[in-house]
Length: 473
Image (cartoon, rainbow, N blue to C red; front, side):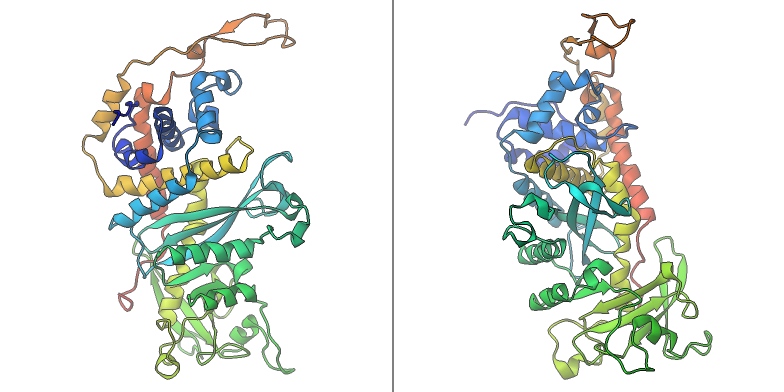
């Protein structure tokens, strides 16, 4: 067997991490491109994580440099499979006891919308972008991630393609709604054997009855948010929505709570919040019915919007299981609140960290290149957890040794300066090495990749959801 060509190593322990993926890349330039791309995503930068930003080159002139062109080829044209990359990443996560998914966690479904100009990019269109809170031109992706109180891991991502990209619009057999994509992601995670206690998602998913039916058909538990105005048929003069039932639950004070049950949420920094929960017994919901509805809040008197949850779940109450023989394990109110609280990973840190790693900052148009970029961001994100669970005492020394390696000089690039002003004469030659640093692995700043990964992880942990209460341990 021919010996593989060695490539410039990334700083340890990043090199230890990326070595696991080497069998997926048949050529040395692919293995090198993978290292440079992930390394560039992890490095702190005031610039966007575009191809020139990842390679630390000047946007206009630097885009013509061989190292930038090589990364463009790696992302768009090279013959490697991003699905195999994802499978290897998940296998690595599942093989580590500190990051392996367990049945105590949840599968969080969410969507991310990012603004993109033009009309030639795959999946682009005018649609609601949650990041902006309005309809604009952009790309939306549906994501799944596993989470518990200690750690969370991105599982999969799938782009949503607007109807106008299809010949028959929404009637085209290939068209999929965001909700259908969400169900497919959940089914895929379940089929691949990723354990989780329940599927957790926001009101967009919770208000869709066919989606909830789909989860029940898969015999999976779910914990989904509903709108306060969520209602049902009711007789005149009786409460007919979740908010109305909550307001009529007999609350007077903490000493006279009526039907409200006190709960204590303990956060990672050991701070404590007092919450109140209400089991809804009205309309189609109840402990003896297919679905339960629960309202949780910090103040039953005012039901503040920011700290009040209206939830629907198919996890049975503890009193119902002996009678019904439900296939899913029962969940009391503490468990219901704990499970939905894990969704705060997404709202408070996951999106911010994704964008810090350049999730939406790709400058490619093809479907394959966009999918590859997202999977590479997931690899960089997963490395943060890998770095935390695999301390390497020689990491900084190895990185500094790598920084001493000589950097091959870049060829000069001829820049067309016509019509750029009197001071810029045609034929001027600008050396790329005079613009910016020679490369990510050619200077001591590669150590920053490790520091930035640790800083990102620290920001995630600070925003972590509540820890398990003693009652649930």
